[in-house]
Structures are given as C-alpha cells and as structure tokens.
Image 1 (tube, rainbow, N blue to C red):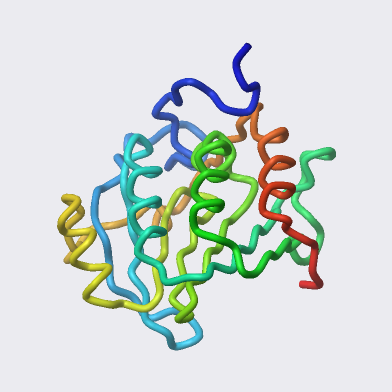
Image 2 (image 1 turned 135 degrees about the vertical axis):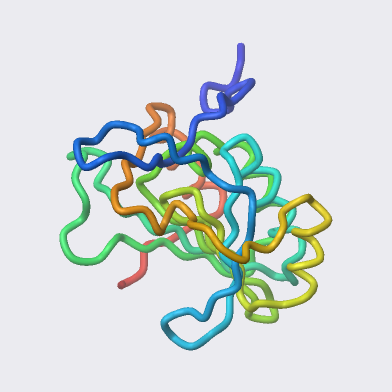
Length: 199
C-alpha cells in the first residue's frame, strides 16, 4: 500500500499562473532565470524563477548549499478548514536546530504541499543567517546575493535575467490549491516539530 501523502509522480502543475482581469490564462510562460534585487529591508537577494517541473530540483539544490543547522519557518497564509486567508497576519510555525537530512527527507514527502499548493510560504535559514524562501507563487528567494548561489544557479542552467518579467511582476495571478496538501501539512508540522509562534 502506498503512502497516501507521498505521490509517486507529480504533474508539472504550477502553484500560480498569470491570468487576464477576467481570470483566464493569458499565455505568460514562467521563465528560467534569476534576478538580483534589494529587499525592502535593504538586504540583497536573488529572485529565482523556474517552470514547475524544475522547482523542486532547484529548491533542493539551494537548500543543500545552506550552512547548518537550519531553522525552518512555515507560514500558513490560508485557513485550510474555512478556505479563506487568515485575517491580519498568517500563522507562523517555527523549528530551530533542524538537521538538513531530516529537513530534506520531510520536504520530499511533502512535495504536493510545497510545490503545488499556494496557501503557504516556507522559510529555511542556515547557520550563517543565509536564507531560502519558497513563496506562494512558486518563486524562490535566496539571501544574500552571493557568488556561491549565482554559480550554483548558472551551473544548473538558470541564467541571470537582464530584462523581462517574473510571475510576481504580472498584474493578475491566480493561485492553485492541491487536495493532498492538507495531509502533507500535518506531516510537515509533526516531522519537523514546528511550533506555532506569535506573528
């Protein structure tokens, strides 16, 4: 009997798509590229965009480049029971001193949640305060803008974007929900001992 929270093969379905004002797909294709940015708090970062079929691969590679131990924060943006966004701030769940092996093993058991469902964000911080964020639209942010991360991305065929738009730049974006994500969220919280903290 197969594990009900570990699909044998994931379809290449995006977490979010660009749409018209009427909510219909507008034909925008998710680019394969990274872009250097300065975050609102003044820190440098790389915004990484890849098609859905490469999202897990690139995320795992960047996670593997973080120093140890990890701290993991899970932001639940949507109340799964009511199907509505949390009023005010999202719910935050935190775990510190997470072994990368346990983190990666758990992430791989929760791939429908992480890479197909848009009701959350996942933050992973390394021991040297470098940080990796997977957002609700399927974009990845890595802090700081460092040559080691650039070299890793370039080596994976993800070039720097000099011009053009990422999904986050589009006027209208429709997010997707994944039915199997609810059970996987429970698994993620339990395996990594993520405890709710004040926002």
